[in-house]
Image 1: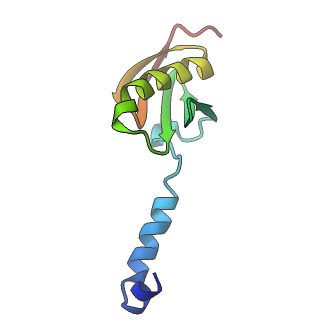
Image 2 (image 1 turned 180 degrees about the horizontal axis):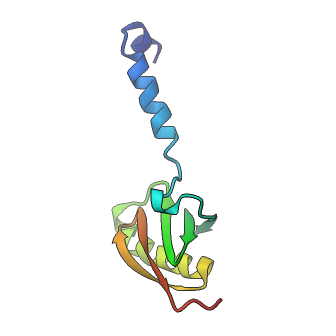
Length: 106
């Protein structure tokens, strides 16, 4: 990195690293102000946000392609466990999902 700083492209590199570090677990703007809960299941960490009948879940870290189907199913289980509702996915993949909550028990 020192070499990059000496060559004059260090500032761009530093800004990129800082921006990347800030992306750990931020929800979409629709979830601003929503409480979050972090859960670990099957060796993966997830953060769930719930607001006004909607949810968002983000998986942290790497999941190999072979695990992604199981990770999607686990994400739905985590949302149900955290919220007490049945999740209906509107968008997303094995990294993040958003949707509506139905049949809530509370």
